Amino acid sequence: MGAVHLYTRALSATATAALNSVMSQHKSLQSAKGIAKKRNVLKRFERVELLKKHGLWKDGNRIVGLRKTKPEV
View 1 (cartoon, rainbow, N blue to C red):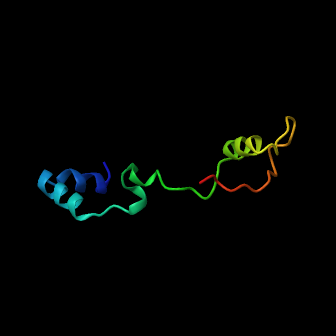
View 2 (view 1 turned 90 degrees about the horizontal axis):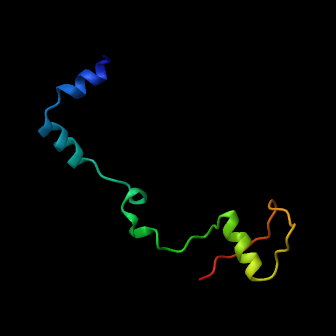
View 3 (view 1 turned 120 degrees about the horizontal axis):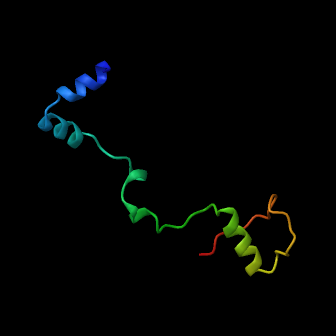
């Protein structure tokens, strides 16, 4: 067993809970409440769908080098 594993096994449940309560969580890792906000960058399939919707995509077009698109509001 490694020294780190022995140390963590030696911690009591109260000490572990105390360590966990002291640590904070970065805003980007918190719950899903932030998912609903507008994204500035679209994934490739979203860009293709948007181009099809605007009539700028034809079957047989290359998937690389797509035109710039702005997300719909």
